[in-house]
Amino acid sequence: MGPEFVLGLVLILVGTVASAFPRPKTYLVQLINLEIPAWGLLLVMLSYNEALALLTFGGVSALSTFIYVRVIQKREGT
Figure 1 (cartoon, rainbow, N blue to C red):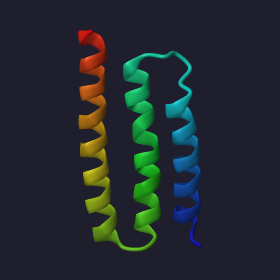
Figure 2: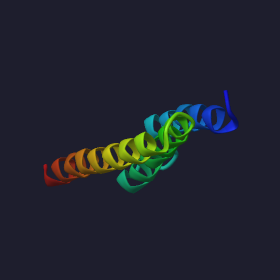
Figure 3: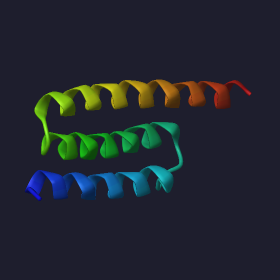
């Protein structure tokens, strides 16, 4: 296990906890905290293959941001 793999796992765990239990419960803070596990996933995939890491990071970031913005819109609309 390389250092980027271990750091990636730590970022995934810390980011998941930070996103699940944010300090100020605002949507912007949760959106920012959602990027922490994405960077952790990038580092884990980077330890295996660079192309796979970039494609996975791009896909995860785009999908998670899109889904989360839709949730924010629905909650503010009601």
